Length: 178
Ligand SMILES: Cc1cc2nc3c(=O)[nH]c(=O)nc-3n(C[C@H](O)[C@H](O)[C@H](O)COP(=O)(O)O)c2cc1C
Image (cartoon, rainbow, N blue to C red):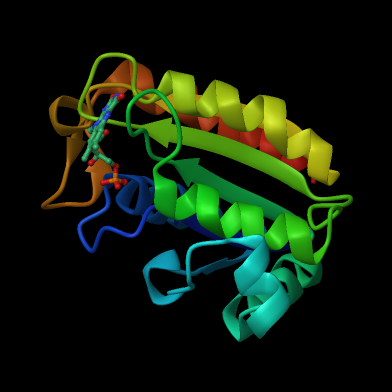
């Protein structure tokens, strides 16, 4: 049984990416999944002056430790104007300054979702290009389109059959490869 750390790259209390992460985590029984909410990771905007004057925020050191402690990660990124929201970019900037290889050896299931038809695909593609720089291996990825048409926020489940099949396939590959 491997340890998986799961989170959404969002600071919204109603994050749809967080809901997707919760659903996906509920489908994994063969590994231990811990879900965290980055909304609790309130850190200043990165600047070289901030780093010089005040050092690294404790939250960032804690998150780096939690990532290091996991065998694999499930991350769902949101999309703001074709890329990550500034909140998640800021967290990743801090982590990368603290340790350039903060994802060393981590196998990742990367996801994204948005209310739109592309499901945050641009943001997912950006993550695909950036995470390997920090040492990650993206094992599987899934962009979940038109969130509110295909997911019930009442039951917390994917409602569209074809998407559910695709997601389960991706999950099964991920669970076997970690
Ligand atoms: C400033 C801003 C820009 C956005 N840009 C995009 C975009 O480029 N593509 C997209 O699919 N959705 C976009 N959205 C809608 C988000 O996908 C939507 O707010 C979603 O709920 C964000 O994910 P989250 O709830 O997990 O934070 C944008 C939302 C905001 C507030």
